Structure formats: C-alpha cells, structure tokens
Image (cartoon, rainbow, N blue to C red):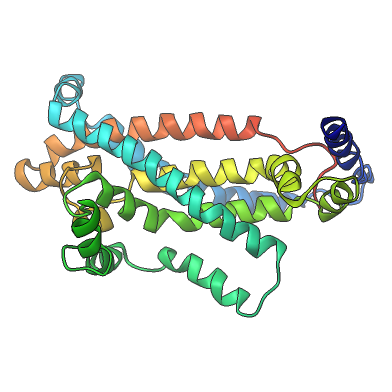
Amino acid sequence: MAGILSDAAVQEASEVAPEAPPPVAGLAPPPALGVLLVAWLFAGLLLAFILLPLLQLVATPSLASLRRAAGDTDIASALGLSLIGAALAALLSATIGVPLAYLLARTRFPGRATVAAIADLPLCVPHTVAGIALLMVFGRRGLVGRPAEALFGLQFWGSLAGVVVAMAFVAVPYMVNAARIGFEAVDPRLEKVARTLGMGPWEVLLRITLPLAAHGIATGFALTFARAISEFGAVVILAYYPMTAPVRIYELFLRFGLDDAVAAAVLLLALSLALFVLFRHFVQRVAPMPGIGR
C-alpha cells in the first residue's frame, strides 16, 4: 500500500506545476541590425581571444613529439593521476557541497548571505595563497594533518589525498552554485503536495527534489571536474608529489624548455576537452521534467 501511495504521490506531484504559457508572437522584437553587428564583433573578439592561443598550442608540436610524449611513462602517470584526483575531488565536492546548496536554496537563516559568500571565497583567493593556507591546516604540523597522521596514518603532503584536497578546495564553489540553482528551479509546491499525499521528508528529498535538481547537480559535477583537473598552484604547494599533469608540464618547462612542455600540454588539453565535452553531453541528457521550475 505504501509503495502504491508513493508512486501516486510522485505522479501527482509531477503534474501540479502549471505549464509555461506559450510564447506571445512579436513580444520581443528582433534586435536591430546595428546592435547585432556590434554584438557579433565583440563576440568574435572573445572567441578569438579564447581560440587563438589554444589553436597555436595544438599546431606547434610535431606528431613525433606527441607520440614521444604519449609514450612517456611519467607523463602518462601524471595524466592518470590528474584524472583520478579530479574525479575524487568532484565526488568530495558533491558530498559536502550539495547539502549546503540545498540549505541555501530552501531555507532562510541569519547569516545566509555570509555563508554563501564563504562558499565562494576560493574563487577570489590566489591559488598559491590557497596552497599555503591548506599546507598550514593539512601539513605535517597542521590542525588536521598532524592528528590525521598520528591517528590514521593519513598524509596530505606528497600524496593523492593532498592532491584531492587541493583540487576540491578551488573547485567546490562551482558545485555549490550549480546545485543551488538546480534546487531553486524545483517548484516547492511539488514537495508540499508530496508531503500531503503521505511521503515523508526524506522520501520527498530522494524521490522529488533530488531527481528534479539533477541537471544542476550534474552541471556542477562537470564544472568541478574541469576546474580540478587543471589546478596547479594549490596542488604544487600542498602535495607536489606525486605529480599531476599541470605540475609535470611545469617541471618539463623548467628543466627542458618550451618544446618538451608543449607536447605534454597538448595531450592534457586534448584529454581535458574530450572529457569536458563528454560530461556536457551527459549533463544535457539529464534534463529536468517538463513544467518544472519557476
């Protein structure tokens, strides 16, 4: 009986939100030709600003140097570590970031704006500063690092754990903000109707709220992963070893010059772009239910 009631609650809750009214023809007149030309001019400048350096980077190394870099075990290990570290950092960010996003979207409490600002702080902290701050907390004599090593044998310096912590610190705001937008897009009336039909608060959260906010959470995961895999400053100070791909590329640049670093950089760029496109495609498939949102 409870299962039948739950299914009915889900179905009725999904039908409560009114459908968006059809667009009114001619409501928004098309922009004037002059406005469009100016907009395309600046849009072209922006696209050129982004693409020119990347295209020049890709066009620089020869196929032989790319094959040599791809066969380098140190570079392959660094790329693999970046992938693993970024995935773990995204999972960690989702674990600790989604609950905060839910609170910011669904509750009003004293200091809410301050809490939201604190969640965004890593966006404006220079990453070398972030690395030093993390080292003071997670280092050998840090508030967390010392007891973690003494009690659990867990070290954050020179380890995968340090890489994940550094990546997650700089990337977690993307998860919080995207998930918060996802929760805010869910009509609260759906949750209220589900409660009146007999669903408990946890069932409403798991069967109504989270599925409807999945698009925002998936977007946050993709952005967090993309930001984490590219992190250098915080990682190089807190962990350094084992080397992630950005740290390895920087070491190649210092030791052997630009030519050796470029080939490894192109491999990291190709891998990052491929994964980002894959994640974005997945996010687009995690579409919200029709008629949901404000």
